[in-house]
Length: 314
Image 1 (cartoon, rainbow, N blue to C red):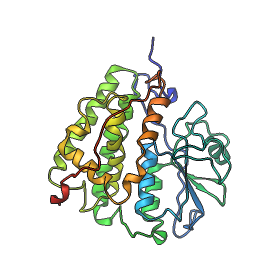
Image 2 (cartoon, rainbow, N blue to C red):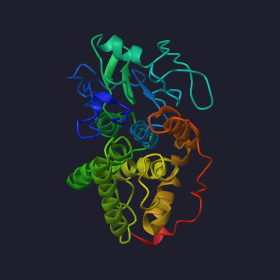
Image 3 (spheres, one colour):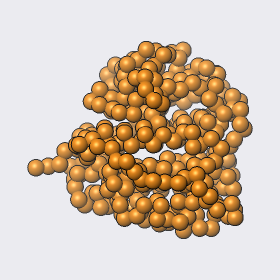
Image 4 (cartoon, rainbow, N blue to C red):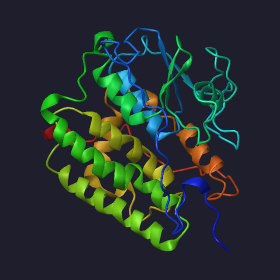
């Protein structure tokens, strides 16, 4: 019997998971030429604390000081066949902006013919009542480069002098780690799983070496690439190691990567964006083809607040 795929429409004939493309990719621009000008309070984020793609947006929003300019609603981490839902609970809430019960309602209002998978994050325009973007890559760049006039921090996570290096490293990390763990976890054939899993560890091994000589991946402070990697590292030992069978090594087995993870976790208010309860309940309760019992593991124990010793690196 052929193994059941978690998302059949995104599964190849040879058992590979091939992620769907983002459907909505309009941009907010400072000159307003796109029809979506920069305005405080005009846009709203729908996110999940469990999802790494949304988590990177939550972090950038916080680091850029955009929390008052762009309000945010968090969905229930447990997703069923109806998709992401708005419910009151610890760390998540009902949608008081539009009264949506499910995020799919935002997709249908934007395009009633939409038949793809409903994903987070979503950048919603309150004025036109439609989705501006459901692309985490685009939303991340918009918050970093288009909303600077509303930023309270003045942070520059995508500096011009590092952009080529950031873009090149982003691509490697996305292909092999960010999405690579999903390609391993959602594979329905042994060969497809092994190819993705080995590639993930090849990149982690390379990053371990890179981080032995420098505190952060690109610049003297954490930049976009660091936060793209962070959201995968923080989920690796609690979820990807067991649930997605990426179990050659834990992040805790890499001295430099584990120190780097703790360094980023302790950076400013980033720890406030990490919710392990949401993370573990989402993966273990939602992916029933991988975990049919839906039992959520109690571990692992991690001391992410412990000294990381990376201040000595430049």
